[in-house]
Image (cartoon, rainbow, N blue to C red; front, side, top):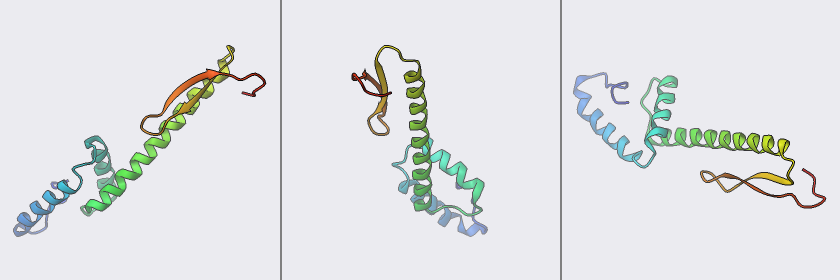
Length: 113
């Protein structure tokens, strides 16, 4: 990120390096793959270097979108399994992100699919 947003004046290189060091410290707890996706998205949308809070917000946004997509995929899979199921079982999603999973139980007598 520091190479994409270089200072305009050579004398500012030291301050730029310090800014980058602080940015790195501020986002150090974010998973590297998520941070990389956020940085790629940021550089496509902005001419200016982000603040740590902006990168953190973007990471949250990306993570939320990915989590929502994950539950949609799980639900489609459950729907497919339930459409094919003839053994009296029902497939469903349980748990919270990131530990969601598909489980199965016996369909109760008289219960609709």
